[in-house]
Length: 241
Image (tube, rainbow, N blue to C red; front, top):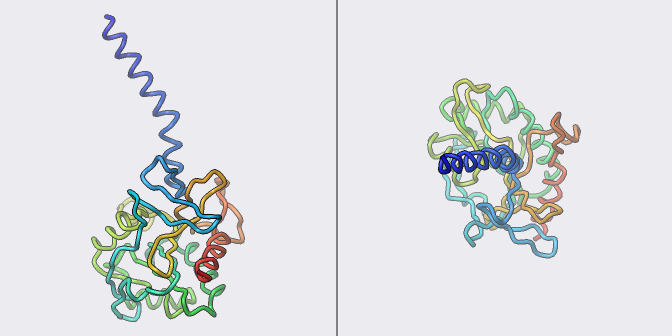
């Protein structure tokens, strides 16, 4: 009886831990905020933008090779020497992608006079998003930056790049709106190909930038604030490095 009584208490403690802490952890991951004790550590340096660090190594954009809206082969080498924003999207997305790309158009226009700024958009529905489809999509939204590539290619390579390379969730889910689910986050890359970010008031890294809230709206229905204004500030910092 005593042993069974102990098991009951252990089970109760585990249950309480799950109720209290698991939602907090999930919420921090969704918001792109992870502290040093989690799987990433980001050092700060006199208020400058920090490097994203994993296991003591500064994280760099993995090698990639895809075809863009002009049927040109684009690799990570094409972004060398440029500051750029990374997103994962699909052209038939009925929910967050239109908002994300409206925001990116604003960012594009903000830095239209900078030859060393670009955007890398990777389709998570490459079977449908052919170069022709992506070209029409780019024209519809007003993509004018020559270094804004909307890319398509091998689906597994794109999912690996999203989920492993950038740790930005993307997956085909038939019952999700549009058939796919993905995080509405942007990643920021410096001229040397390193992932960069800022930290919050508590020293926690804000690794990604919310892309699915319009800058003019200020915040969404959940009280989450837009981060496009912050993204613009950080792009300016990296362009000046």
